[in-house]
Length: 162
Length: 206
Image: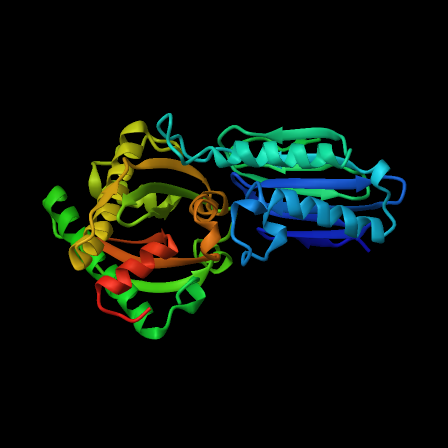
C-alpha cells in the first residue's frame, strides 16, 4: 500500500517503495529527495538553514540544517538497505520570497541553503540529477518512490515533474 | 535564564500580550486618521505558538496569502509580518480605495502598494508600542511584500530567527470599518536577547 508521508519543516522521513512523500510550502527552505532505485528506498529532507555550526551547541535539531540532516538521512537509508554509491538526489526550493534592497541581510538564506545542500551532497558523492531551485516563489514537493519522480507544485504555475 | 520562547512564564507572556494590545490600539488610530473613517480593531488575540499552529490558523501551508514583512533593528532586533488571505486583502481594498472590481483575481500595483502601507503602519505601531514602553531605540526597514503560500512566507522570519526555538508571537485581530469585517494576522519574531531586554526594561525578572 502506498501512503502519503508528510515531511514537516526541519524534518525528514525515509521509506521503502511504494510510498509518496510530500513537504508543503518550501520557501527559502530546501527539499532534498534521495533515492536508491535498485534497493527501492528513498527519503525526503526539509532543511531550514545551511549549517549547524552557525548555532550554539544547545541547538539540537540536526534535521534543521543541510549539513547534518543529509548526512543523517543517508546513514539511515543505508540501514534500510540503500547503498551510498547508488543514491541520487533531486532538490527543490531555496527561493527568495521577498524582494529586498540590495545589500540587505534578509533574503540570501535561500541561496546559502542551496550551496550548503550541494556541498554536502558533493562530499558524500551523491549526484544531483534534477533541481528546481532559486527564484521567488514557494514550492510544494511530492516525491514518488515508485517512479522516482519529484513533482513540484506552486501557486499560479503549472505543475512540473523532474 | 531565558533562552527560548518555551521558557516564557505567564507574566512574561502577559507582557507580550499587552504590547500586542497597545500596538493594535495604535494601529487602529493610525488607520482611522489615514482613512478619515472610524476603524475599530477588536481586542487582539495574542498567542505564543509553534510554526505549524500559526500556519494552520492562516488556513494551511498552501493557502494563498499576502505577506508584508518589516525588519526591525537597533536596541531590539526581529521581524514583524502582517498576513492577510486573498479574500480579506480584496475586502480591505474595498475599505481603502474605491474598488473598481476589475482585477480579475489579481491585485493591481496600486492595491498592492496600499496593502504594503497598511502592513507598514501596523508593523510600526507595534514597534512604537515596544519603544514607548521600554524606551529602546528601534529602527524599522521599509516594508516588503509577497503573495504566495502561507507556509513559504512564514518560514522567512522563522529562518532568520530560527535559533531561538521555533515559537512565534501570533496576533490575530479583527478590523471593522463601515460594513466590512476582516481578520488579519501579525506574527512577530524577536531575538531572544531582545525579549530579555524588553522584560528587563519593564522590571521583570528574567
